[in-house]
Image (cartoon, rainbow, N blue to C red; front, side):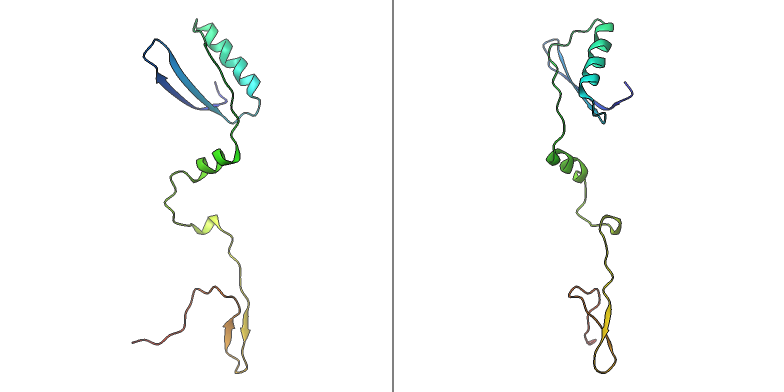
Length: 106
């Protein structure tokens, strides 16, 4: 089936196999119907079938699964902070978060 993006199979040991199919197709009834007829054409019985749509938590877990915790530049929006000159004409960063720090070398 073209619309199924991932299959998992688990042999239950009692002559049955539990199958999970993941799809990006939003029409779950159509997917269930096509699965039923595909199995029937092969002479295989489906004893139980359930359809589950992913909730926001499932989507978040799938998107963040396997990340190393390192934030990549492409994943966040960076903001330019305008420089403001002090009385002496020296430019200072007006933002509270700064990538540079002032200090003396020891």
